[in-house]
Structures are given as structure tokens and as C-alpha cells.
Length: 172
Image (spheres, helix red, strand yellow):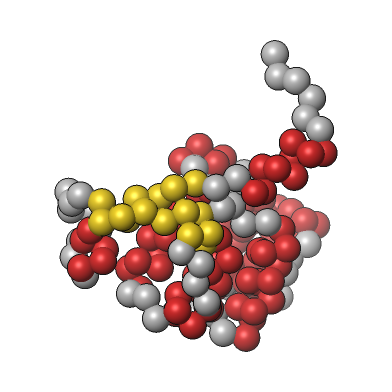
């Protein structure tokens, strides 16, 4: 049985470090998925809430900075500046950003993705986007009440035999 964790235990988890092997192909510009020996290692730490907040705020200004800042904040060894990380090959930054996201718990696993797709509101927004031609941004602005109203309108339209005619002005 698991034991209760202390504040110190929880805070210490943010300072844990992880050694990550870099495939040689990434450093030579080759295919990272090819079977190649490790070229070396870097040390990463999980991102803290304050790190993620800093990245999100900075990324509002320049979206390209997101991956660069994620990697720069998480790199323990070698320590690099934002400019240095920004000068790395894009494939290497993408590889490291994926590792940082996984270490920080910011990735969706297969099961998490399946649950998200099956979630009632996600399914409802998908149906509304398909039926009314709305973008994800437009769907995200709807309240739960509006979502339920539009779904009910679609259901009634189907019962009345007008399936496939939902795009005819009901999205007002």
C-alpha cells in the first residue's frame, strides 16, 4: 500500500534529473528512428509549473519559442542559453522537447488519448463541428448549455427525416 507523501517528497520530485541518450543520427542530420548508437547523453529535469507558465507567456509572442524554451528550461547538463538551443537542429530540439514533455507528464498516453476522444463533450464538439462546419475554436467558445441545445436540434432534425440538412441555418 502506498504511503502518504510529504510536502518535501512532492517538491523533491521537481528536482529529479534524468539522463537521456541522444541517437547519433540526430546529431549527424540522419533519421532518428534508424538503429544508431547513442552519440552521447544529456541530463533533463521535469518542468515545474512556473517553467510552463513562463514558456506559455513567452510563446504568445513567438510560437517558435515554445519548443526552444521547453528544452532550455529542462536542460541541466549541458546548460544552454535560449539562443544556443535555438541554434540546434530542429530535429534535435523536437526529440528533446518530446522527452521533456514525457518527463514532465505533459504528454497524452494511448489510454489518455482514447479517453479524451470518447469524452462526451469532445464527441459533442466533434459532431457539431462536422454538422455545422465550425472550427475547434468556435466549438470551444460554446457553453455546455449551447452544446446540448444544438445536439438536441440535430437529434430532432434526424427524427423528422431531415438528416444531413443541419447546415441550413441552425447554427445561429
